[in-house]
Amino acid sequence: MSVPTQPLTLGIEEEYQIIDPETRNLRAYISELLTQDQIRPKKLDLKPELMQSQVEVGSHICQNIKEARSEIVRLRRDVLELADENGLAIAAASTHPFARWEDQIITEGTRYKELLDDMQGVARQLLIFGMHVHVGFGDDPESREIMIATMNQARYFIPHLLALSTSSPFWRGYNTGLKSYRSVVFESLPRTGIPHSFLSWSDYKHYEQMLERVGAFGKLDKRAKIWWDLRPHPVYTTLEFRISDICTNVDDCICIAALFQAICAKLLKLRKQNMSWRQYRHAHITENKWRAVRYGIDGELIDFGIESAVPFPQLMGELLELLNDVVDELDSRNEVEHVYNILRDGTSADRQLRVYHEHGGDDNREEALRAVVDYLVTETKKGVI
Image 1 (cartoon, rainbow, N blue to C red):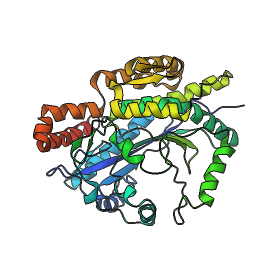
Image 2 (cartoon, one colour):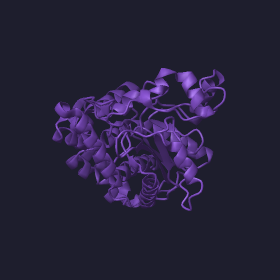
Image 3 (tube, helix red, strand yellow):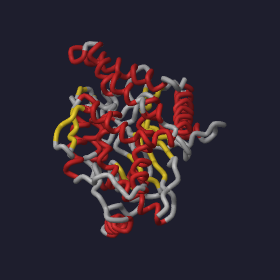
Image 4 (cartoon, rainbow, N blue to C red):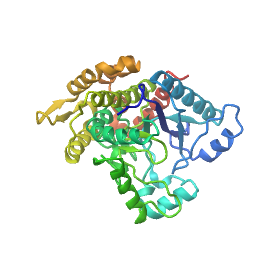
């Protein structure tokens, strides 16, 4: 059986916060930005999200990680320029340090109206921002079967990458004590979290079609509302990694994308050798996800092979060793080994907490949170402008 040609194609979507530089709070302004984008020479094809204070961008299909970096730098630069023209700023983090969901203006449109009608109060609280990485597998039936097999095995690794990407320690003005509070908010929706495994592409499609028949996807917007942390995309022939928080720093973003791609490449290489990675039960992987949500890179994940909790840096060293024989084929060694910088300097969540405590923390909460927003705005520009 043939396998998709390496390097596997990449696509990255990012959701940014629209910031008022004076108040440091979110600003409902996506409608104005969308209108301006339509007449700009450098059209961005901005996408609205549920809240008017959110803006989404998506890369072109990229043949390798170097091209993906160029795309993300281009998109961030153009969004930052557009925001600056309107006296606004942009921040990349999965929650705003002190904004309240109750104060947000909901974007008009059939898709969002149906979501609110269906999910009610749960949807209204979705003031969160994510990053999705698409890995292309090809459009033929064999590739779809390979994609499902890859998803089944790749599930084990995705809590590791959530830990590396955490950027949402604050919620509505408080330090939550978690590194990825976005994950908690998002899992209030149905069909979220770690996916279960499937026997085949037809097994997965049967599940999707059954949900459509019973009305789980709504009457107007027919897109499959399956929002797992890892899923076959309902439109594109890609495996979509959705577990990550959005990375504030571009280098961190590209590292996470390179790791997702390398994991897929490694699993395909094992398949060529008539081998596979062990498939772990949903309950096991969910336990590791919670540890990533709570502690990020500072905690321990469970090595289920030896049934022992292992410090996260040790596990990442083992993962990089596993991927060692594919990263040069992908020309992504430097991007993947940026992991060591994240382990040394911390994730965005760690750095936000550092800024918060340096400015007084809970004893000076309002000013400390404003300082965190300033840090996020500055760090989002790093390596871009």
